[in-house]
Length: 548
Image (cartoon, rainbow, N blue to C red; front, side, top):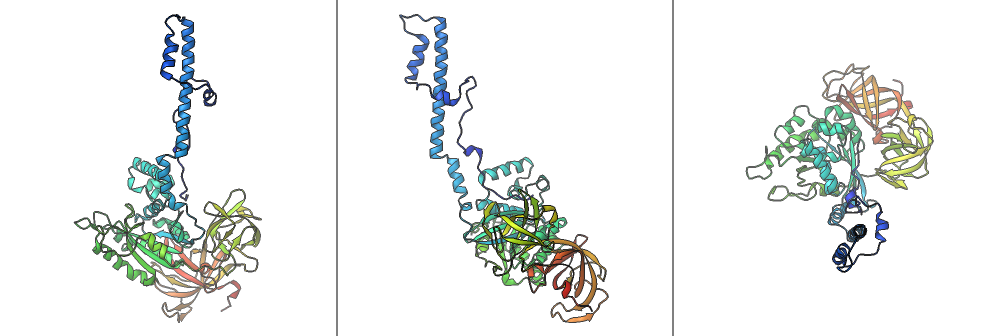
């Protein structure tokens, strides 16, 4: 479950009576307010109770006067409550004013801003969800009342430092373990961009969910922990830092921000309480050679020290008294200034389905990779070749008239049932259908895997949103990793680190294209026994393959 931070209006902000109804009064407020106003309150109740000296009052009259007095007291009480409520409604309480101030950044128009998808990746416990949640809070997407609720609930479970993470980790299982299991989703706005956050799980058991998030992302934020021992665990001892960075690159992410988190941790602080530059440099210097090795260009990598829990260097630049050696801007400024990705407006519609469900019809979710989708447009669901009509388009919780490349959308469609759709199906236009294929040739590169690979090897393939079992039918040639020149034809096996051209088959037809034709549908990842075995790009598909 991946909730999105929504505008929250506490009940205490709504106009209502300040007291409970008077217990002994049968009349409602409307009837009571119609009674004549009470004037000279002090004299009135004394005169009614005692009476004049020359007119003795009977017991019955006294009781009658007491009943009248009770009605008058209730009438006055209701009038005072109504007056106080009207004053609060017209003037606004300090709580409302504070709430309006808090959410000011969440209410500006997002339509004029470039839409960018950002995935937070890294080893488990590096602080990805805390950083993401704190960003949502600082940008007004999570209000003070909601955050106070998270803080109370976290404190009750002796997990007070997890309060920001709970903005994205919402299931009881995630909160109990303090580990993200699904790819959380939320949004926030900066001056020039509209971001969709994809908070990927860091545990090795949930790498498939992380891959699903990375395939939809334009920018990745690799969160690493500077705390003594935690960086080493995530990077040097087979942690997920290496695998996540490699998978993000393979999934097509072009820009990477390395956020060195927990710089305020006591284990690394300088004696005077300032941030430790030596530790920051140590983490960066160990990570950079690996990032370059797996294909990241240094000019596409941005480095920043942060504290996700305290919020230092997220929205505002860290105080020079805390970190005088960092001279660039805070994380949100870097994100806002990054060059937006190029979008395929001029191509035909292609949208892999990442989720589907029933809600007043059939709803499919996904990232629109190319083309523009409009309401009432006719599309085809491939590989089933079923014609569908777009009934409604939603971006986050807002219904819109059109969706553009890069948008993460929900489409309510007519013409197909939810059970006839599989994750990984692709929406296309009639004159640009992506055909389903069960056989393709691809160039693969083997990673550090303990066994050799030969023809007949089976594993799981992740290609865009699809996940399918596959088999390597033939090893056509071994190639040089740097030059792509053929080293050996028909090798009998491949060892870790080798690259090759292989013929691969899948049991069910999947929508794929050659990488050179459309990269988003032409790159894939092979996994086996919980480990990433190889990465690859598709060269030939289906009937374009010739006999050899």
